[in-house]
Length: 386
Image (tube, rainbow, N blue to C red):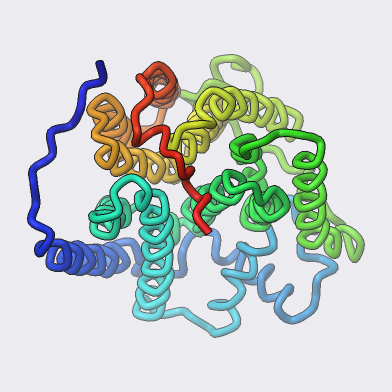
């Protein structure tokens, strides 16, 4: 027997007031965190690096964009920062307005995707419940943090993975691969979302070919111009190895983490995500659980463990939280709640990252062994509605 959440019976007439209240709270949280996260002196972190590179793209000077190997952001993220650079945004007020606009758009996108996932499970309450992930993310400051550190990709990439997963589940292999490959335009680790393509209803030669064509086309459009027009040194960068990381424990005498080790890290993340996708592909939870597994392995094996690396995991955890409510799954609800609290306000170390990975694996096991219910085995798969 599956333990079910006992949800209070809420009158239907309360739906609109509850939704409006949640939206207002989200807006207030977005504004408050934009003010708190905005630096009082100088622009956001990495803006001085990404802004000029983005301006080069916008002004047609593409040859030297990736000349400096420290540029590890993709062209889309560089374009993102090139806009305020060319507009001359400098004052704290300007950055606050910029942060509010971007955080608002990200919150809307998160809520919209959550609603699409919730609609087959709880049509009546899908809209108010969908605002909850955006609200939690805004209150905890994750969206504002991603912007303030110069890496909005930490929010955008997982949202794009969800889109790719939804497209894959409805059989749109080419479009799903295009969206997935487009995540590398923000940051190269977006390619780690490849396992979401395994959520397609059928995995055959036609699906593989269409996925390959879509992904390769998008990658060529994004990176071929820069590789052909000038020096492309993105893959000659090495990351420092921080203390209290798995890399430091495994290689105590090494100080840098080159791209070959990044590839090894990627293979591990892809493998874990692929296994999770194959075991959960018939369940709605796969849409958030596969990205969560990939990000957990990436976090555990990373040599840096920057605070903002936890943002994608937190986003997937809160998404899993509301889907668990819709499915009345107490076990998954509690697991997501614990995962969120483990990472939201603790120091990132190999121990906390390892604990997060254990929790994700345990949650995946719960999802796999949980007896099939109407919520997790809906006849109309998530993303299949046309």
